[in-house]
Length: 461
Image (cartoon, rainbow, N blue to C red; front, side, top):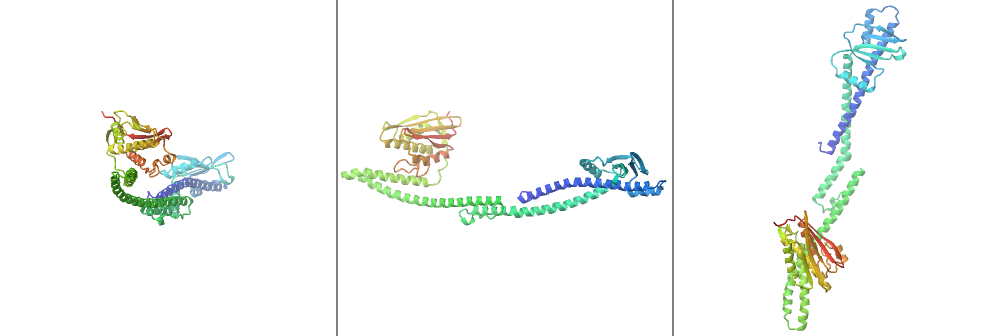
């Protein structure tokens, strides 16, 4: 109950209403005590004036009756600067406290009222005030504290009962109002979210804003916008997935067909016909590119790359193996420069990191060869306390603007005719799988340079 919005609101309502009632209760009790004392003074004043109308001595029984009706032990009246004991009777005990209503502030009245309510026993108290109707300068009486305490307790109980009814009625009304205006509309939104989460592709489950509350309606409109975009994205993703599955199937069958065609093309190379011999290499190159495209598409269309199997690897031997596989370990049109510390090591999957360097170095080699001129590929690296970085740069012509803008977008970042644009996408994915990054540092007329950053560097002891 307390964990719900309505429950917490109910608790806060009760707390603040009770606090308000306490602030009302204290002045009310103080005011009642002040009125009670003034009533005692007024009755005593009437009794004193009745005594003053008689010049002679007053019968003791009459005096006792006047004092009993006023509820006091004696009455002192000051008129014309003369203080006169008008009515008197024996006081059962010494005066325990004196209260002067002429100079009592609000907090004094509250304090004395609470002290009177919480007091014990029956004490004699003195009350001083100003006579009503200008009947004198001062009136002073003595009386018992027990009747005052009983009257205060009775009045306080009535105030508490009234407060309890007000609190209960207010809390109930506020609870019902909050439940109707806030809790139920929010619950409706929550139900929409749950239903939509179960089937986000269903456009019928997108919420329709209906709330009359401005803030809640804004939330519903924002939720509607998000759900609409998400449903559209999921539909597009589903269509792309279906398209990808179809392309994968077509690529698979096409690869088999091209493999057969490649076998026949190999036989054409042995033909003695000069025209056939001249055309055969071109045919073989075209078929090879088609096969490569099919294999790359199939590889990219598979599920995510497997989790890397980490092991301690020296980078220099791995890079040299890649260069050897690309035919760059012997002098030729493209020269390779390896500037790696011999003990530079990482925790990585050797096969996956090999594919990363193979993609980068192959792209660099093909870019330089496309110019028809010589060039260099440089692989350098270093380490610090937290990471290891490797730069792969070349002196090629640089990447075209379109290739730079779509560098890591599948089928869009290729800078070479016949390329698929998947090499860098796969390389970046493999590097991310190791907790690192692959980024383009520069690409201009002086060449292209990539930076690989990997974590967890450790040296072999």
